[in-house]
Amino acid sequence: MELPFSESYKIKMVEPLRRSTREEREQWIKEAKYNLFNLKSNQVFIDLLTDSGTGAMSDRQWGAIMMGDESYAGASSYYNLKNSIQSILGFEYFMPTHQGRAAENVLFSVMVKEGDYIPGNSHFDTTKGHIEFRKAHAVDCTIDEAANTELYHPFKGNVDPAKLEKFMSENHAKVPFIIVTVTNNTAGGQPVSMECLRQVRKIADKYGKRVVFDSARFAENAYFIKIREEGYANKTIKEIVKEMFSYADAMTMSSKKDAIVNIGGFIAMRDNELWRQCSTFNIMFEGYVTYGGMSGRDMNALAVGLDEGTEFDYLETRIKQVEYLGNRLKEFGIPFQYPAGGHAIFVDANKVLPNIPKEELRAQTLAIELYLEAGIRGVEIGTLLADRDPVTRENRYPKLELLRLAIPRRVYTNNHMDVIAVALKNVYDRRNELKHGFDIVWEAPIMRHFTVELERVK
Ligand SMILES: *Cc1c(COP(=O)(O)O)cnc(C)c1O
Image (cartoon, rainbow, N blue to C red):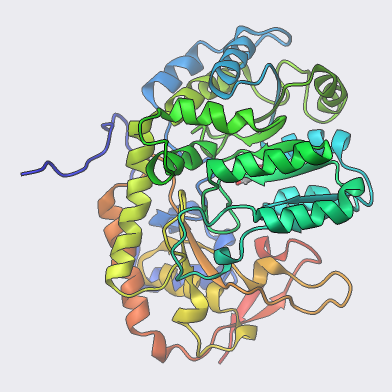
């Protein structure tokens, strides 16, 4: 008999979880104004709000933390991180930042100016924010298949080379660089193929432009290339990662994702002149160039995390867990962005709750029902997040109304995945009893989803 698949690690330290009653949860979510961000973490049983900074570090990482060098300039921890970035990602120059959006802020301070256009696959919210804040424009050239949740495509995060080429041929004078997000978070943690990265490089070369990777989940992307793309089955993750980054001139990184640390980020590049230009902004916004907002111990943990995060056994455990949850949902007939992405399951709330008017926030309603059912906290990726049109102030209703269940790295077991699947099935089974959602009673002028206050529609 073939041995079943199991985790590539064992557990050395644990943290208790508190179960609650439905009555308690009814009270807590009401007090939280039906906004899951307002819940206290001890009011949550299984927390799937995000996979960012929520991973469990290894004994090697905790060991490296004890060896942190807190010197202001030239700390050994900085050089440990530099070596790790050079050997794993292949970039000669880098600077640490406190997290991914800070890396964007510093790099874009140099590379983006008013009136620019930045094409690529789907831009992450903070990336788009940093582009639009500079009065420039993000241009989404993702393949059309990404918007159809039921359609199988092995690389649903891809840039459509025809769309990109067309945009470049008409607008290249206003394009400072092309950005590719690996994996494509906004499309559901969907991977980008090596073939696509090669094509993007070719188009960039044709117009003499740089390519930047937004790299938060680059290792999960490499895993999908190994499993799904012809010619990569026998390559190691580290070989695949090296080839991926060979098509980029620079990268921004949120280390809170695939580098399995709780805080941190960096920018890496090939060009010394670009490094010099960035260093001024890094010193202004983040800190001196050899720490950039990170402590020595955190840089040490990150250096180890980059190595562990690009090991096949770890990635297989991680991605098979997300896939396991997806398979359980499939068994129950619950519609989600298929195939499962690297870091999360995105449940299609338009298909689960079509009877609720879209003005009453379908995905948020589903998120609240799942919390009430079992104390599971997901997050709405729908109308609340899409916010209002800045000019007309009308609500923007996105094509997809999703409930994202992000899986923290090395934190939960497959028994937890079973609890999530069954809880969602129970909600799904009573979906026709749910006729109404929620009204907004207060919202901030931008980024409303974090602080919005809601009430039940009676
Ligand atoms: C998380 C994320 C960022 C921003 O990083 P932070 O560390 O949260 O500031 C940027 N791009 C992508 C694709 C991300 O997932």
